[in-house]
Amino acid sequence: MKTKKTIFSVLFLLTLVFSFMQNGIQVFASEVPNITTNYEIVPGETTNARIALENTDTVSHTYTLSTGQLPEGFNGYFSLDGNVVNNITLDASQKNIIDFFIDVPLNTSVADMSIPLEIIRDDGVKESLSVSFTLNQDYALSISSNIQSLKAINGDSIMLEIGITNTGNKDLTDLSLQVDPPYKWIVENVDPANLTLKPGENSLYKLKVTIPSSGQAGQYPINISCTNSDVTSNSISIPVNVSTSVNYFWWITGIIGVLLIFTILYFKKHGRR
Amino acid sequence: MSPMLVVIKKEITDALKNKLFLIILGMLLLLTIVSVVLGSYQVKVSLDSYNQSISFLKSLGKTTFPAAPNLNPLSSSKSFVNYIGLLGALLAMVLGNASVVKEKRSGTLKLILSRQIFRDTFLNGKVIGNMILLFAITFVTSIITLVSVVVISSAPISSGDIVRMFLFFLMSFLYMTFFLVLGIFLAVLIPNGNKALLITVIIWLVISFILPQIGDTMDMDNQLPGGFFSSMGMNKADTQKVLDHFKFYETTRDGIEQMSPTKHYERVGFALLNIKPGFEQNTALEVLSIKWIDVLGLLAPSIILWLLAYMVFLKRENIYQE
Image (cartoon, rainbow over all chains, first blue to last red; front, side, top):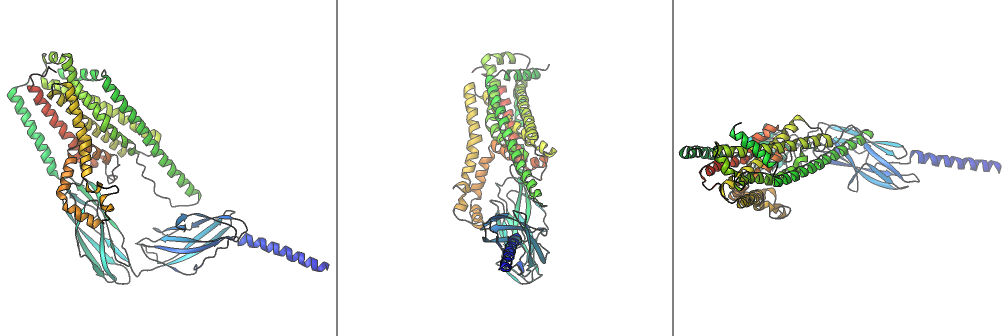
């Protein structure tokens, strides 16, 4: 009987210790569904990895979420119910799904990568995860222009040439140029209106933009990108330095000059008083 | 001492005894100090907030930081543009009008012109004397602004910023000079001094408020709150099609705006103070070379009015009467 009691006591103690260990180590068991799945990233787009976080402890905890060093140009952030979060509080046994978003730059050369995620509980317990991504290069598009900046006079039209290259592995059809000119500027013509490019092929867009004669002098950017239903290219910004027509200067100085001559003649005729 | 220097000296002494001038000057300086101090404090708050965020991120072990907000220390002078548009112009008009009218009323004009002094020299003395006063006011204001920005905001201010600021105050001086010359011209042209001041104020109201307002009101996109084109659900392409059909209307609208020195002052001032985007990379002199039409828009009317004042003053026989 005494032996049975001792065995029960030891088992009870072991259960307690085990239970304590469970809370100490798996306090925040992070279930990460699809974590072994390789997420696909597309240049210029945002990819979403979903992470389930569970508080297996008996009390409420706050978790701080952070990422390891991201490749240059990449941006990663956590989101809960549409709000960007860095901390999340979970009640005992509560489970929640967190979205990890990663913005991929258009001109990335990173093909495969693994991003470490770190989750630190308010009592200092840490857990690290690793999310891997592979670059999808089926659809990729790049545009460029040799024009660093343009000079123009208000009321003038400017011609721009934009180079476009299909840097992906598949054909790109129905490509169209998206031109975002400053307010009141008019895009007169884009040639060609639509374009199809095979992988590695490049072409040239020509466009004509008219600056309104009422436009003020200054520097204005024309933002240009190219798109179709599958992909959007990088965006380039061409600064246009608009100056006022020098004719106005001649008109104004001419009027002043005429008035000055008239004043001198007037003084000569009537004499100084 | 040459006769013109005597007139200049007298003009400055008289202005400092003119109560109306001193009241307006006091108001202008007070408003400038309040607005610049508040503007500098706002820059300081933004800077402190950014520094706190960086410290917090550093404590979290982050190595990449958000870009600094646009801490444009020059923006603290933004309100000054409005004050110069109102009180600065009023100050210059009072100076211009008083400089001629006081001489008529006190009978000193007849006395001065009976001496060895030509009418054009007399007029030059009046204009230059008052211009020295206006220059002194803008210079003092610029020093107050610079000290406030450096001391209160603690924001980094470059030599380029300082040049921009002084050029902005130079534009403010040119703007006030226009109203000074307008005041003198009308005081010379119109025998009744009160009527001359009234007409000067009416012209000021027209070119400072009505013309820019007409320009804004005639802007098609300002016809509805939130923008006409976006309210009508029009995309950029449709907007451009509409604008393309209204080129003449748009040119007329712009022409009306161009007639207002206030608009020119605002345009060149905002460009120099970096309030209008697109001039951040330019040096102060580059901004002036880009905005030369606005500088000319401030200078040309003053020169034209000055020349007209010469001619009117030379021939007037009833100049002594009010």
